[in-house]
Length: 62
Image 1 (spheres, helix red, strand yellow):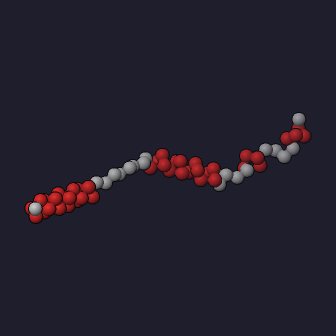
Image 2 (tube, rainbow, N blue to C red):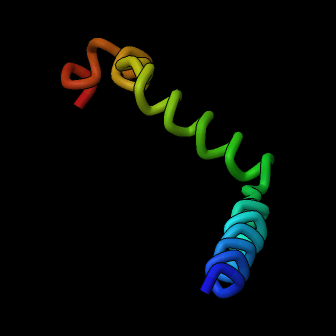
């Protein structure tokens, strides 16, 4: 009985150590992530610059 318990404990310890060594790495392309981040920042900090570039008297010229 003691031998079975010892074998079970050893098996569980080995299985636990092996499962603890598993690592999952996910890599994102840095250039693509940087472009998306820049686009998001541009959208957030966007001002009304295109509206300001229009001539103020555009209705008068028609």
